[in-house]
Image (cartoon, rainbow, N blue to C red; front, side):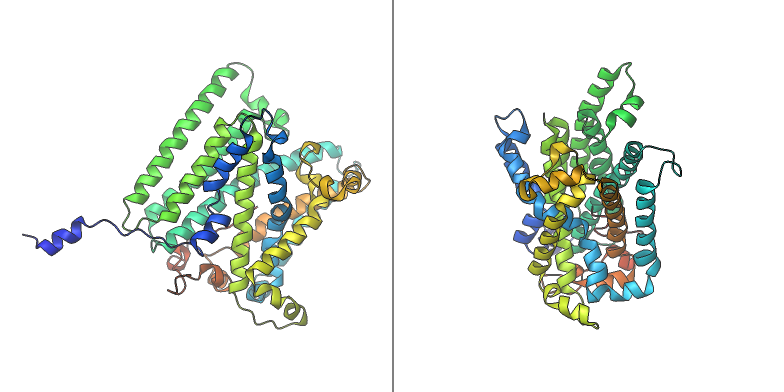
Length: 419
């Protein structure tokens, strides 16, 4: 017969991990912000038929200006401007040097080639580049969710739990990727949707198909979220931050299905993604190796030593890039640069430089996907060393074990591909 002590231990509840990436307040601001952004956005949109004419638009403007394009260059800052990542530039030149140059050259060639060389109007080239970008960015967002779930799993001491890892991947890809695409298609918020999405749906039975996708999507999101939460709560060491992240992700996707105005989902989905990328970059930069070998890196050292300084610099860069990269990123209905730069921003959108700005926008986007994967590719010991400031436990327990650390053959399992 088991002793009373053994029975007591068997009946004891599983310890709950409160281990955050940095601290509860920091995580709530930069990573877990859907917990407060969703109710805030819904409250601000209350009573307004058009969310663009509600306080939500003002909130999005305030957040988009410092985060939008700052997050796009965040991984480039890690790769090229921090001493910790210098060894990667030396040893992985194909990934960090050659590939970005090839991507940039290809984007400028497609946008600037004369029709005698590429017999396709500029407008048609833009359509197909946007389609390609949509495919990449949909996976990019889902990969970020998988990476953050993995990071929280590692914080909880369950880095090498293969079943949970597999469930995280499928939850991120299906709920954070596939169902988001379905919801966007149903609301007509995919760029050039009438050119390449609507023809697939067809006209026969489209209303029935839309209703089935809408209702079925909501049901499956709720079921899958409940399944993942159930597995988490029954684990040997459930993580409260993981529970919060799963609930926040599901809430955003449900807003995509249920909100009358797709702008509400765009605000939530974008801000969470941008802020997570900026926050993680600040930790990786400020916590990494600060031994600067060149004069240029010594000049940047005061910034890289301070996470808030990295965030401030990226925010300023985001502001300066706004009128240039908005030309490719959004239609005239979503322009924000004019509120700061006035007529100059509108002139750029119709100037002779539009093809160049389109090429610049596509190039920075595609390079951003590549560099995010490279700078957060934690299957590489060199990347784990460079980004140890992000992997470092804030509770003083040293570097957190990462799934890729115990299984080198694993694919990327970090907060990679942050658009």
